[in-house]
Image 1: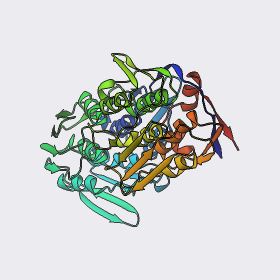
Image 2 (image 1 turned 90 degrees about the vertical axis):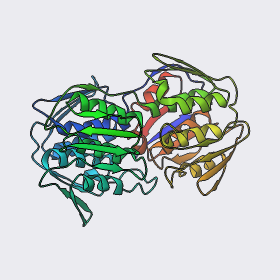
Image 3 (image 1 turned 180 degrees about the vertical axis):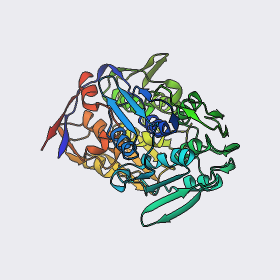
Length: 421
């Protein structure tokens, strides 16, 4: 089993370029199922395990997929879809596989998929997805670990209120409604930049979507969508991770291709902790020459502080001056990184959905594991500043969401390598 070995204490400096967004590329890849008449070429596609998994899911449907790693391009030809059933062995690896249900329902009027997997950070029920499909006229059947949806008379526009602004449900309903008969209105949708990116892609293909990024989205269904090339937005979570890496190592790093508009709460909290952050049109420069100050954070749906940055920020708080409180409101099981940070000397107490972090002057390297994707990133950050050697196992979680992490960190001066046991 592969692991990461880090020797901490190296100050990071230089420039790192942010890759295409994991949380944007996966729904866009799913949306290529709606594109007809020709192939789609997606640009700035990151080299991630999740991209490979969803590509394999599409191939099982009879779709032609080719990923050019050198050019960061993914070509998808969904002119002919031969199958509407996604296999368990692929879907269990990644929750985002469920995003193919909306496009398949819209285009073929039926879909069957296994109950999804992914990181074990909470229940993340799919009931909001199914509620949306049912409102559009689909008949849902759940049994034997599978979910089937059929719309023999096609999908019909509807008014849908989401009890929680779920990103996945918003994306799935958005794709299904793009070819439904009539108007669909989604109230209380997710407002993340990745939602806007998906809507932009669908509109380029011929969809009629207004309001993405606001609290009401209106979709006028169309009869057909035509495949079109598209460039994926930069990954705000990857950018935020490198911003924290620069702050923790008292470094000076320019994060090229980062969009500051997508990172307002992270930037605000870094500035509050005493970190220097300078924004421009091409990226963000982060520098720090002292221990950050303790700050409190509370995760919220966008535009609040992102839950996907909670673990990484907590890693920084473990070496900050003072006591911080971290409150997680989005997922109920997203403190799995705490035990690993404690192994490295962090002082953290958990009380329900709140963690109290007493900042220490140093952490100590040891053997730890990546319990999920963002927890893995947090452990890497801790390893960058820990005394001695840190060995990180279960790094397949990290590979799901970070493109060329080791190479990028090495280019900034980190002592990190990937080894095989």
